[in-house]
Length: 354
Image 1 (tube, helix red, strand yellow):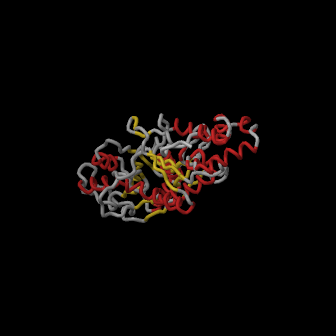
Image 2 (cartoon, rainbow, N blue to C red; image 1 turned 135 degrees about the vertical axis):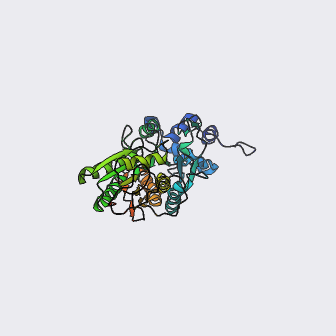
Image 3 (cartoon, helix red, strand yellow; image 1 turned 60 degrees about the vertical axis):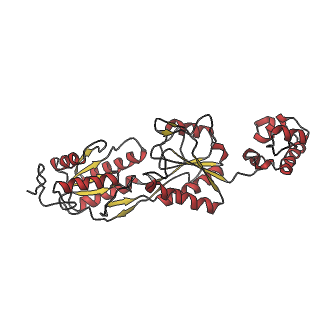
């Protein structure tokens, strides 16, 4: 036995079992035909040495004796706490934690991944992903090349949020943004709005694609007019002016944080929400914003998504093919910012009513 508390190695196991280190490695990694040719008696002798010496504490050795590590990894492409995004990501983590406890797993948060171009990377020289039996991926956008490598590797993982195929189907639990957005469009149309605006990128991340798709489906179905106003790096007052100029009476805003800023800009111009302009938020704010207004919106089932991500991951780890992709319904919230279409439009230049 190695002395001084030194960590056991495969060489130590081989010496104690009276076999070659290559034999230990083959048994440990179960490498194809080579492993199959090892006599059962030899295999059992190696396993017995591992049990007797405590080498089973090593993650790879636990797999040797048919056990998982009972560790689930959580990899976040963006910092989740303590940051300005904590309010958005915390419910996901709460759901993951509760489900991991129920299934008997510990959680391992991967934090050593290097940051390249402002984003973490899974694959790097010190990658420790396989310390965990499987991993849950969190982030607004996930790197497609890394998703492709994960799919090809066969390593068990689940993405939080719908993801497009990446060389094969990606296991995920997402929110049905398209259906929820379409439902809010129909609510606005039922209140008499005939020209709607979509405010946000509407592309890039799958979550943006789905909101945009739901908006387009619903406006085409109802036959109303629409405009698209990207919000990034634009003055909110200019956006409000553009909405009034184009005759839009209701705006659906991708991020509720942007809706809060637009409401303030509208108020500064004497434009009442929802009396003159209705604002509808397409989900929870991704960054904290102070407001006393209850926005008409849909709520993302974030905690439930976290819980079901763990459930799906257990299915993936068990080799189950069904139930690997799920979309959960969003809850519509009535709020205070969607009202009937105004009977007269505010002056587009000065914010005064005609």
